Image (cartoon, rainbow, N blue to C red; front, side, top):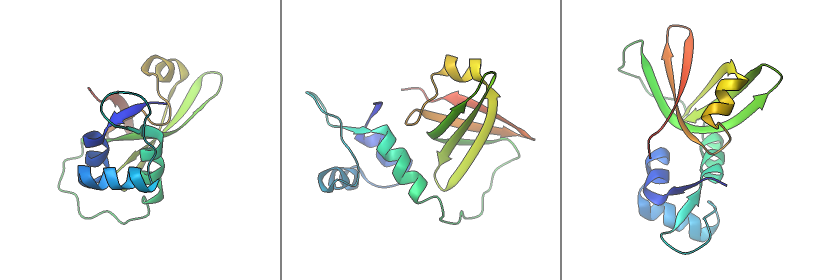
Length: 129
């Protein structure tokens, strides 16, 4: 499973680091195992984000070129194409791209990514760590 730092999970969920720690302790989020700093299972963050996706977004003051950082919640691949779903705060963005691109990017549930929307195209980029 992909792991992320507590601060990264807090940023994606819009809560404090302490809230993430409480959610790890209560089982609301799944933590990584092993030595070193405490981590959060990225798939559990994606699941929690997807649960709260029904929250209506507020007004957005952005241009037509929008960037939605979030986390991959679903990837469906067939012979040539892949459907990728990104949960970006309350927004669920779906993109249809080549399977080769999805494979090269290593897209899978729990991977941090951003959907960039320009006109009718959605481009997927990986977040830097």
